[in-house]
Image (cartoon, rainbow, N blue to C red; front, side, top):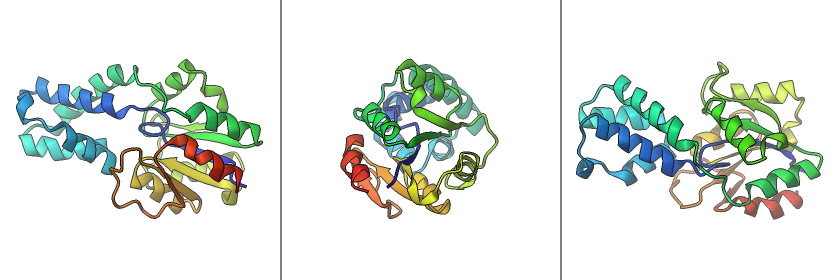
Amino acid sequence: MINQLFWDFDGTLFDTYPKMVAAFMQALSDLGIDDVEIDEHQIYETMRQHDVGTAIRKFSAFYGLKEASLRKLNCQYQTKMVADALPFPGVKEVLSLISGMDGRNFLLTHRDNQAKGMLDQFGLLDFFSGFVTSDQDFPRKPQPDSINWLIETYEVDRKKAIMIGDRKLDVAAGHNANIASCLFDPDGTIVDSGNPEIRVTEINELVPWLTNK
């Protein structure tokens, strides 16, 4: 039975990408880039297929901007805008299901403790047994250090564990920690999936898979 779930935050537990893209676009605008030159879809694809850091490097080079300036502004706007994001449908049901199966949920995110505050705001924080955020000094995914730390700290059986995320790097992080992985890809953006054990377009698609394992 798989009942030890390691969750990514952005784009997995919470639908933050629309806010993240809006923040990025506002940062570009503040740095003098005309709205007609900004490709919203390209920004989104880069964030989903890679990460925010890649988007900053790519678009600062494309527009001839200083990376540090774009990174600073993006961070400022993102913190404000992401605070209004909502959990994906089905998240609470799956978190609750796992708790009822004598299982545990763990948060594994590149975001800071804002993620925990947002979980608390929607009554989801108590479903989690352990956390890794950017406030801890772990290498970023797909390096498995943060997953391994949670596994060792909470004595998790790797055979019962799965990493759930919306990007290939989440899938790779799980596999690098010798646990299963699930790709949550609601809009089919991810072409190279990294061969997850399960791929879903809605979070509640996990329910029959988890209860049959």
